[in-house]
Image 1 (cartoon, rainbow, N blue to C red):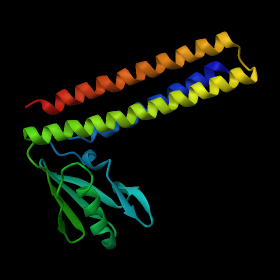
Image 2 (image 1 turned 90 degrees about the vertical axis):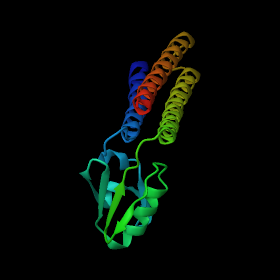
Image 3 (image 1 turned 120 degrees about the vertical axis):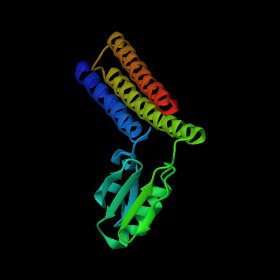
Image 4 (image 1 turned 30 degrees about the horizontal axis):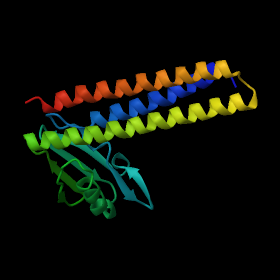
Length: 186
């Protein structure tokens, strides 16, 4: 096992966690309606959980309204339930096979709840990053134990993995602080 290849894989996986976090917080609205708001919503469909955009078409007919056109009539109640339970504070209005979702005004309480959701997303990202770190450290210990790398090289690589972890977590913290500032702006 080559140390640099292993570090590149660890870096790639940590970056993946950061990118997932970026897409999660992009879905938190700050003013205008955006189809991305519903990205984190998954629906119980056909025996598994699937992203909302795989069972419906999402549109933005007005600045403060989302439209969801569900392809399968039998999925309407499941989609409505998934949106209500998504922690996004949205209440869809059923209109046949379509849902209209008015976006509430962002008052102080609503802004604070969005910040709370952003913090939850950040914590999920940090946990994913720590899992990648743990996997990397475990593989380094195994390589050291198997004699593939020496003790000094193992310690050096462990330090690099820890630095990578710290940098990536600080990226998540910076992104969270920016999003928090954006949400709380009046």
